[in-house]
Length: 308
Picture (cartoon, rainbow, N blue to C red):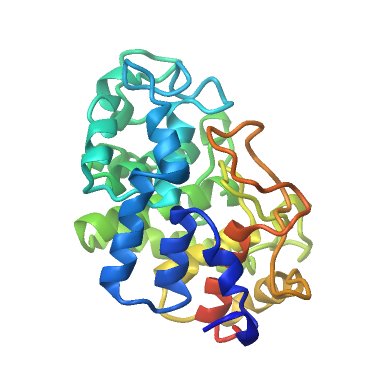
């Protein structure tokens, strides 16, 4: 497979190991041993190695857990998760080992990192990161199961009186629960919660209000990486790609939107940079072609039978 197939594979592979190994796995169907060998490089060179090297002596990053938002421990671990650092590597084990005790939650220092905090939009990502890196996050999972709302979604504003789900919060929880099941095996309660949460999004065609069919947040159309709590159409479709065997008809409009963003070279732009400062220079700028977004968009379209 090469650029003449409508996929800019050569351009994607001319990059950091953290992108290359995922492109090899998702788009070129490379043999598993070659993918694993490329993935192993994430810990030793490029962006992954740079992030690991920036860890503070006490086991945190940026001197804090959630704050500073510029890249504290929470956002940094999420970045390592997205880069695909091999959780079984010695480098990953060394980096993760001190986090639970060192990275206490900013608003309550009695809460250790893998115990989570109070907001489901944060806890969903803690579950995903923790499950990926082999940590015990079952306590947070149980809490999230009790916090699912009547409409099937989750909302960080529930404690302030909200009784409706939030797209932003829901995608964070769904991703976390999916990673948890991937790491620990199928769980009846977790699967049921994910299915209800997925239906919450599908009923709204991933972007629309039920009441009038409008898209209430235009920012949902803007794909970003590395994403924070923010929902976007590429992120939502990528979740369903990972969670289901085939697309649902209610995703058609969202898929059309993603497909429409492809440029003449088969690439997608970085619509929005969620972090003002990363611990690495990823070489991507808003409005310019993005390898991260292109990779994700292509694997979504390939899953949906629209690649090429």
